[in-house]
Length: 244
Ligand SMILES: [Mg+2]
Image 1 (spheres, protein in one colour):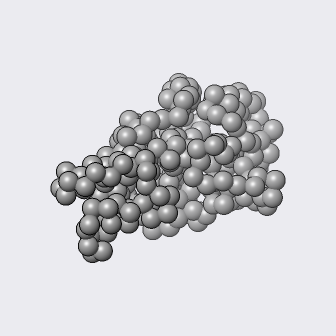
Image 2 (tube, rainbow, N blue to C red; image 1 turned 45 degrees about the horizontal axis):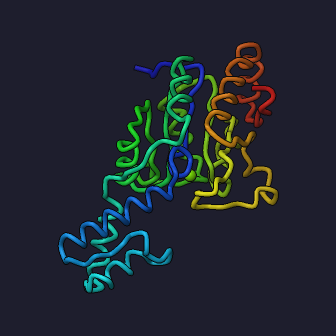
Image 3 (cartoon, rainbow, N blue to C red; image 1 turned 180 degrees about the vertical axis):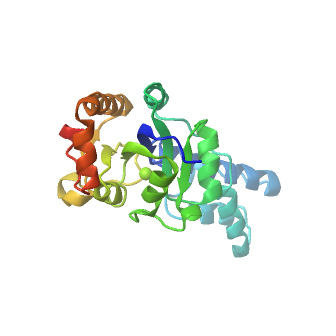
């Protein structure tokens, strides 16, 4: 049976969009140092670790052989992360749900690691699309096509943080894109003024209350200009956010 066609499918990136990736790094290093401490007695303070090769530093501090590095790496990748949604995310998603919109996450990364993050964040989704499972990472259009096939809607939105790869494919497919402006705790930092047009989101937002306002604004506008928007999307012309 064909999936129900919704008015809109709202898709979020995961890392550094819905939560701060720096929290994940802290959480992972704390999990590795705790395990190593229990097994070897080595007391390693995760806060004191170097930014470069922190797992190697843990291994050396615990006097473990080089061959043990892979085990530490997988402990990091498979730990149960202590991470929380950014302020305003839950409210923004609830608002989308009230409008009958589908909610999905499209993220690059490993299947199990990304699923552990989604579980830790308590996200309830209509779809979860992970590059390792899709066999293609952004900026490939494959994940965005998979969303369109699984969650048919009149229109699509992608909310993400990384202009190096996040907005190229959805812009090309006629999606409306919103960028979460880089924050002090972001893992990746960008010179926004130097970005080529194709890599830029239609709108930037400072936080999730601004994102919720943009999504609401577009939803209201869409009711009066839906057919015009559909024609533009069918013609593969990137819609201007002012038209959505
Ligand atoms: Mg990201």
